[in-house]
Picture 1: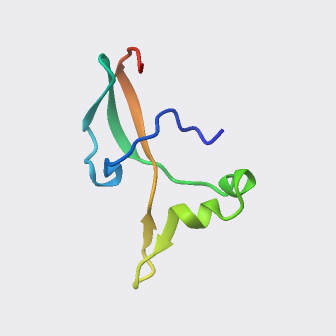
Picture 2: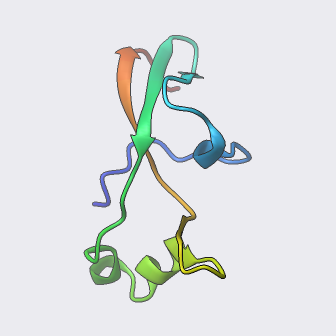
Length: 79
């Protein structure tokens, strides 16, 4: 419902540069194409979710806490 196809644990996705290749399972590879901009629809799924994935620093700059976009380079079984 959120456009998420793969959830990860212990990978700092937001720090990975565009073009990074991630191997998923034995065969699948995805390429990080950029950061994902969360939208207000998140609060329709879980109230307060939008606030949980975005923040502002001391200068008022946006801080993303979740979400990257990627393109499938090669498919495979995710097991």
